Image (cartoon, rainbow, N blue to C red; front, side, top):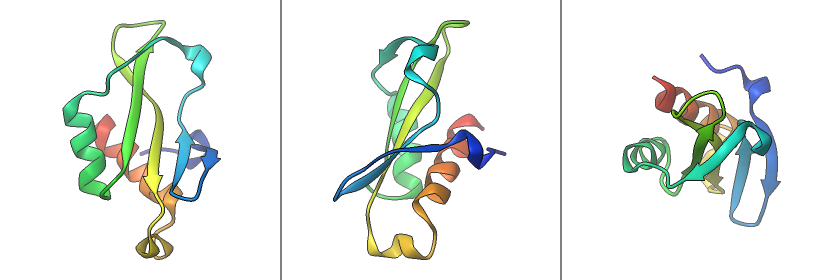
Length: 92
């Protein structure tokens, strides 16, 4: 389970919320997000996206940030909760 204190609001625009999962300085490089990870984000909420990169201690990809679109139905479930569900699904 993801501790919500791991997820920080990084940016809020007219169209989306972006949540930081890891700081940029933890990454060696950023990569194209694998299709399977994008599909997971889309299954949680349409229009969601993930940015991933390689961390210095391994070659494995890790989540850098999650973008959640602003939608009227997000009032029932907050955008941070949506980001948390995306992170949990990708990590499992």
